[in-house]
Image (tube, rainbow, N blue to C red; front, side, top):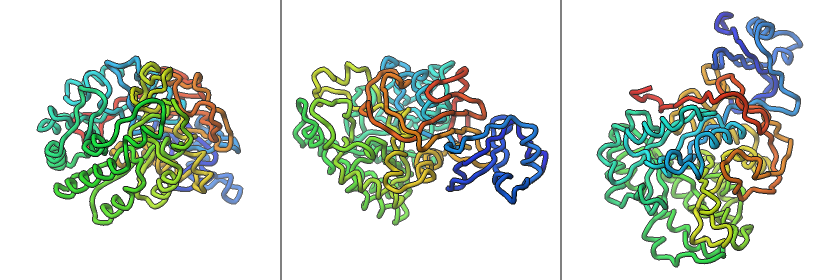
Amino acid sequence: MDQQDATADMVFRGRAVVDGEVVRAGVGVRDGTIVWVEPDAAEVDGESRSSAWTGARSEAGLVELGDDEVLLPGLVDTHVHVNEPGRTEWEGFASATRAAAAGGVTTIIDMPLNSLPPTVTPAALAAKQRATEGQRFVDVGFWGGAVPSSLGHLEALYDEGVFGFKCFLLDSGVAEFPPLDSVGLDAAMKEVASFDGLLIVHAEDASTIDGTPPPSGRAYAEFVRSRPPAAEDRAIAEVLERAAAHGTRVHILHLSNAASLPRLAQARADGLPVTVETCPHYLTLAAEEVAAGQTQYKCCPPIRDGANQDLLWQGLADGVIDMVVSDHSPSTPELKHLDSGDFAKAWGGISSLQLGLPLVWSEARRRGFGLPDVLGWMAGRPARVARVRGKGEIAMGFAADLVVLAPDETFTVDAARLHHRHPVTPYAGRELAGVVRRTWLRGLQVASRDTVVGVPIGRLLTREGATRA
């Protein structure tokens, strides 16, 4: 290593997740970028392993981790509904990015709904970007929307730097973001493939759900029956068929139905460029736990039973599911109809942006997975799927987005202490392992435990290869 290249203005020392392992290491940072990663000098024959490490230790600010702490790359959450502008009373960039920083998430990609306007034109994207000014405590990128009115114009929005395009195959819940029918889906597939874009799909089949009795009242089981597994499987089958016809890169959002895993595994074996995500609520909550009227658990697709959950974890172990992201989709408490507990009327969405890491880690370690597994699902692979530059790993040349986690420390979720705009979460009162003690964004500290520190320094992000920075 060249001594000049190794000079750092900051050094982290302790256990760290590097190259898929937990190792003792030093991590050198200069101007917000990781400039070297070295085995801890003190651990190699009791002597300095490299002059670069020795010099950096003496010249740089040193962050020495405790014996109970591990250094992680900042999480990359590619499925967040911030809702600003237009529905900022549901959530907004200030509250969402504070929650992200406190939860060890240093990059979010915002969904094209439920803001007003939705992100379906370059002008709407510009409005969304303006709305973030002075409010970004972490870095923020954007998805575009594939709706009937935006078809034929997607490349112009792609050139502005969105990371890809979201579509629904059934009612999205908001009138300004209509779904694509089969003809529209085919057109979107063909158009997105023409510029090697990414189409991300809410995959539930409208006709299947329309043919199922709608939910009513407080019984969660009725709501689950109204969104059957077959609706997901049929929609996924159609997406895969059309993606194969056009060679489109596709990503299946928030998979809840484990019965679709063999179909997805076969598509991947056949060489189809398909990736898959699931969410903390599908991995940590089960339908049989949901009491009557607990609308804070409502989301679409629904949380299914414990046996299904076990199979989703197996899908992660097998690599059929690539990643875990929050699908943070908050609303006002009034829209959740907590007073009546009516699942038919309640908004479908779960708030978990700040809690994703301890939620997944708590369950993952119980099932025999390690921190490197969790970081692959929640940092490295989301960055690679969305083509986010220089994020998701502790490696030379990557952003110094770093998190200190105490993996064995436990805490009880207090909804009132979360940075989400509204204290509505199904996780209230749940004991979790894994306390985020500090978070850095490009080498600058942005959170200390659940306190967000400093001024908002987050940047606007564009996908790798965008024509505009």
